[in-house]
Length: 238
Ligand SMILES: [Zn+2]
Image 1 (tube, helix red, strand yellow):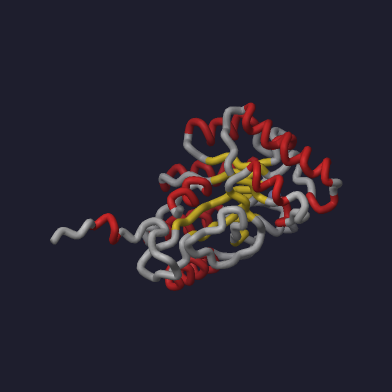
Image 2 (cartoon, rainbow, N blue to C red):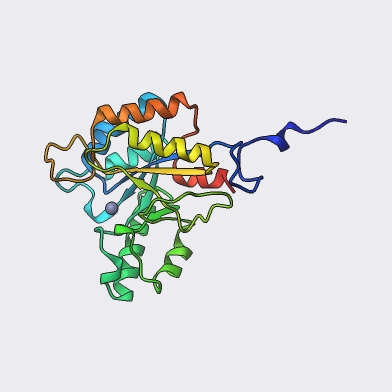
């Protein structure tokens, strides 16, 4: 009797979880088009052979200390990163009228499309979205990321994804421990989010040093975990 080994594979979501036998896919997201993402994080990700997901505000691209359209297009089309929506100018959706909220979501989406970037994922600015707007967002984007961290098991709810946002002052241990916990618990997907890198102004709460970033990537490499842009990761887990 011949057993198909593919049926026993630990990849994907064939087994209902939590299942300690499968290892989580790691996703690195980069929000708000900080120029340090392009200057610092992108080349380090390249060194490790990893691709990430940018969540961008398309009306803010190219403004001071932010990367521009050319950099976004280069990372996405030349290096296989994902470009996701994040509203036009990082608007807080719950402070807008319904029609304004729809406009800043749709025009941002259209800007990404016009750049040829095929947006499939959206990150809620500040993790907020009025319940009336959510169905519209769900119709536009197959993948939606909020802003709180929780364990994600198969089957993944791809339109209510969590993430852990790196905070200024953290060392690599915080992220390592989060990943170790996820492996032990049989989590399917762990999203780690970054904003700025090497910020000199310590009042920013979301900056990561290049040294710590490298240590995080080295740890993920040592553990031999898969790293994918968000849409690819979620598709793998279907
Ligand atoms: Zn943001």
